[in-house]
Image (tube, rainbow, N blue to C red):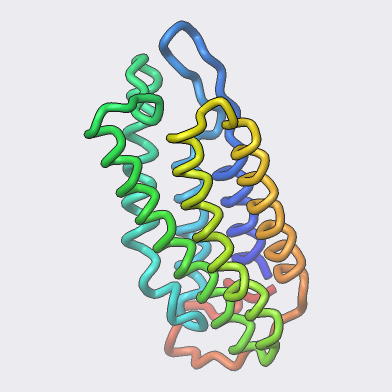
Length: 194
């Protein structure tokens, strides 16, 4: 299903960004806001069958804007994420909270899609992953603040968590799903089902 593949590639762009440092400035190849916008477009096509995707626009737009601002600031040599001042920490905590909200809506939206296609068991693999995702994100965030020397370990833990999600999403996107959709719900029902 094309929108699920687009969500997968959006998360690939989101999770695996490449940074090049030039003095204080940081050049980012395919910055995260590109991934957020790709996910936003894909979830928009799935709103008729996933009620949780009807609520995902705000967190995705907010994260896109925050990511765009941090991208522009990093090009100017003003990093936000590397600062330990209270305002930077507050911004990071707010963006992490919005990110977790977005992931909640994502996991439950994927469950909605599976249920609508009559494959509810595929949906539980995402909702079962969400509590672990929250716990790991909190542990990794606190761990990076308290034990910065172990940042490599926390980055690897985060990478493993993201890979588990991506593998599940990739498998889910390859399953043939069939829906009965009211043609009044979407302009072109065939636009999101392949």
